[in-house]
View 1 (cartoon, one colour):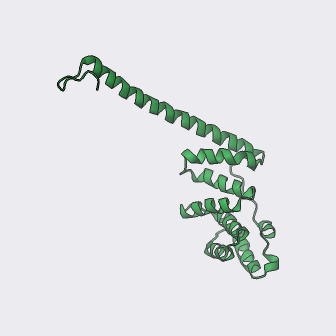
View 2: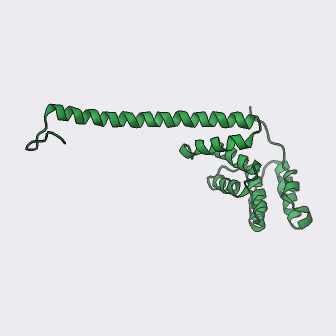
View 3: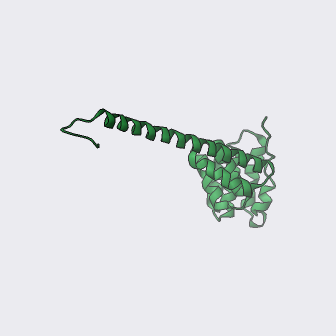
Length: 173
């Protein structure tokens, strides 16, 4: 530190050092606050876009939000469904797998994972995913069993036609 003489510091140098330490900490706090506000803004923009069913506009905002909030499985779920809706099946599959590994995948996520696996040529994995599902809702039981049956008949296993079998999404609120 400037001003050190025989292992002693002047009061001015000690004050300057303490001030710089406080300034750095305050700067980090300001950076964290700025990042938090940017994340919140990204999520708001994504939700607005999703309300308009504009997946293309929502996707970069969701990705930006998840950069600093990777543990938010509710937002990761939206992001995965958004990617699927944009036809980015490989990326969607990765996100669905993350949700599954985190233990937060419900029937819809498992169904979309299986469909993404089918769309990316992973029929064996799709069968595994469908076979592992243990739905409580009868609608989902019918969906999973029907899709598994159709996979035995290549003419009936087009993912687009299988998507039409998905039970409607329940609106929360």
